[in-house]
Image (cartoon, rainbow, N blue to C red; front, top):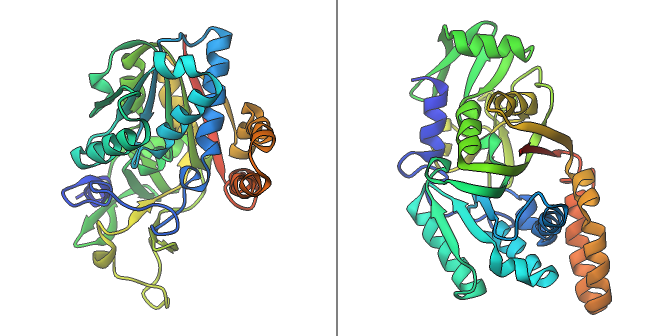
Length: 334
């Protein structure tokens, strides 16, 4: 099989890594910005309010998270909307795009525990099911979870019993590699279809996504496996002391790679969606007002709580943690 099929089965197949509820954070395999601080979602809420004040979003707009996992991110957005602009909390429509029934149930249960019946949460299995006038789409670490092909000097990888061979001729992969100046590495599969689906899901929208990567493609392989907070390069030699056979990691660990944001940008522009900006997560969160939110907390909470939340929020914007390594990309369809 092609590597993209192998990766799709690893992550999304029956008993795949993402097909069932997984812990993220200290007890899980890795950290995300969502598991680090509520102020990540809070800053997005502040930005959404700014979009309403600007007139781009209507008070009855749809706020949609794609790939929500626990549902924590959208719930944090809701919580801060309620604190900052409660009338929007009740006028917005909240949607999660989630293909797995098990995760939909976890998300519904979490929202019910958090908000009772106050938040109207709707689920769709894909963007194709959605048709709204005005929306704000948000996704955290979604593009690095798309299946990819592995490419090496003109050849595309196949997989047999977890072993990789570069023995396929794939014109599409070769053309993408040429376009992004790669002679080896990962070529994501599905960005174009995803962008087209989003373009058809709402007549007017803004989409913001955070992920690990750069605008230009890396010149080598970045594919890696996360297991219990250890990062294992996919092509780790067998003689390395950290080596674990792939069959033992298959469907039990996360597998990911660096995003080539130029590929994301091209996919959205081809779908008729305008590219707005690309910047480090640190810069994006500061520009959207995370520091102002922390100042509000300082005025209204005791010092111990403020210091705890400040330390968590610092991890979102510190260059040596998530602040510089993660990037934000933003698009608009007007």
